Length: 352
Image 1 (cartoon, helix red, strand yellow):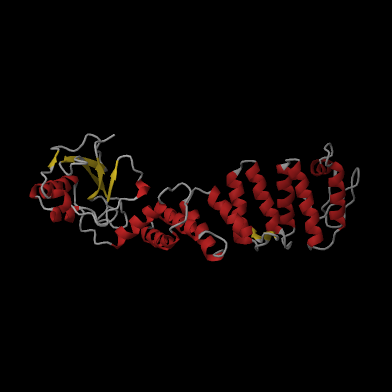
Image 2 (cartoon, rainbow, N blue to C red; image 1 turned 180 degrees about the vertical axis):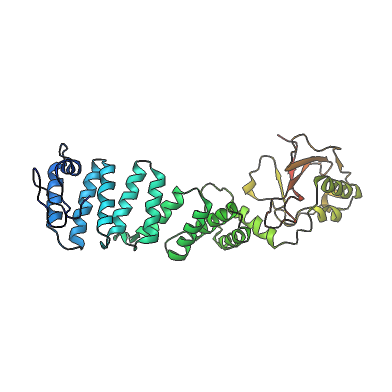
């Protein structure tokens, strides 16, 4: 590409810096056989005559780029803009030119290259207003694009941290903190993940795309992290044995001591997990008194290595059958707890 452009109808003389369009270059950049040829010829002539590095030159370069965009000539657009940046490192609008190049790569579905340029903008070039009318920052939009384009959690952590630290007045903190927690989880940084989820909790009304119960998920992890975890059992047989013994005792208090203190639920099979369980004041004694509770000798056949169900009955004249739900604890933050078992909830009624 060129620094300054001289575009006669056939060939051009060197303008002193060794950067001119000749022959094939002329045909390539001016799209000689297209409807844009006349417009591009005029624009390159104007650019060649422009000596300042201010808004006048920027307007011309931008219009040339727009002509390529209208013609969907993305390769020419990228060649033109990236070469311009390489040859004009002092140009104050290089962030904008690289931004247009990144979007051209996106249009070509060359997503890794698009991400490379968005990253280059954020790390190596000053910020500019992409749209002064909307006060839209190129760095802000580039970071959002990078989050969308990258699948590497280490990079997602970096980009979400940049969003939170640099653009606190222009982002949804709820989304940023929750997704930062997700990224930390993926790289095994559990303390940082818990901290991010803790920061997310005040934004409980935030809707997180793809997470129907983001609040419940984050609250469960934070509360579990802060709890004593003294209701957990080393193995599923140990847990089911304790539950059966408590039922045989006929003591509501003994049964209650075994259930999980965090996230314990009681719902019908039809209820969604996000509907809540209303377990804060649940009293087993109300169901034990005057009733003989029985349980299946073996776990339900749908049980597996991570979840298990025990069919019980006799709890109430309205809903006699309860399936007690046990699950293996997933909590890598604490190796002593990770992999243990807890009684996590109750499903009312026969299985569907």
